Picture 1 (cartoon, helix red, strand yellow):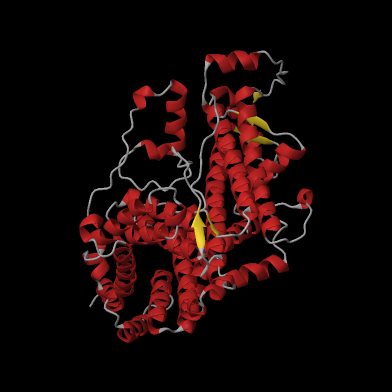
Picture 2 (cartoon, rainbow, N blue to C red):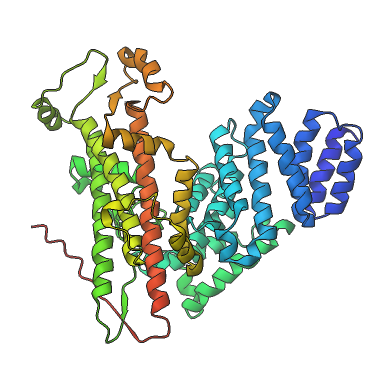
Length: 520
């Protein structure tokens, strides 16, 4: 056999779960290629896959170490996506082998999950070709889902499905992630269960799922199908019906409302789960809320607190979102209003105007909401911090981490994991922009205009946090809005789970909520 045939044989052995045979073939092959860098590239990924199949932690670590060595080799600059991806898979495999059986505690204390998350992100940051993306998005989604960050996991699955709409693992894992939010979705819970059921049914017998390596996935998907069938008392006919949704006629919208809907839908900024395959009235709504119940005969002050606080956070979010949309809505009225204010032009092509002010205000409002989420946790768990001293980065002390560990609440942990991402500098640009806006100044340039391009050097200069181009701050505002959407849903989900936990085995009554807004 030539080299390519031997490589293919190893791949086939792994696919067929013949890991001992794969390792023997790899070892024989190495005798003649041990000094070849290209061989080491293949060897690294094989060691991780074989190690996982053989439950050999040492082999996985050997593969990870070899990948990390190649990452620092300039000859493999164009292969960093593959290498980071393999490292991430290795860490995720180590979590599955060494920590998964510890349940929630294994997640909270797992350095392997953090290693996987970091390297999946690096793989995406460095990708320069298309072939790997579907699997990369899906695996990153699986990692985020394990960390409780199911909204961001769903986003990864959606990105995979944009590339391959029939990719079964993305369809199935997205459905399961959605299952955990059904009770807070604001939809009729039957509709969301039907959507999940139909998606799982569509893939359960597909070839890429029934392959040898995916038997575990079949068992998981089947378990969720059975749960939903039990919820519907095994009324399969009802589960197979087309989901009905309210029609939508955009011709009745004003020019601005259509612009608002289109932009927020495009960037996925509405607080909903998009369970329908077609655009409809619910596509442009924010129905997510806790499923309100309380113990019969008990006062409802705590329920009132939850409703008011979540209302406030949602209100802040829709205002921040509106400010962002207004910053993008160029029109004569806003031009006239902006021109009523005198801004002195400093002859450097910087821009101060109403639109940029709205964009800066949207960004600042977003960051403030993160601090408000932190203070909710402070009040909810009676941590004792004074309101004005609480922010999203300082709330996570040893006492709160102990509470999280004992809570077994995945959505609460998801909020803590977002804080870990701040520590990892994943959101460094967001933090720098916020500090400039809050404490100093932020000067915006429009680099899309030819006459401004000479200022690119000023803006991109290292550690220059007071200058930014218009496209970057717009993108970062979308970034923080999407982060906030996730954080708000995690907050609502965490509260919903805690309320239900406290009401377990008690006589309860449901609230029928009045959603009047008194707008007239």
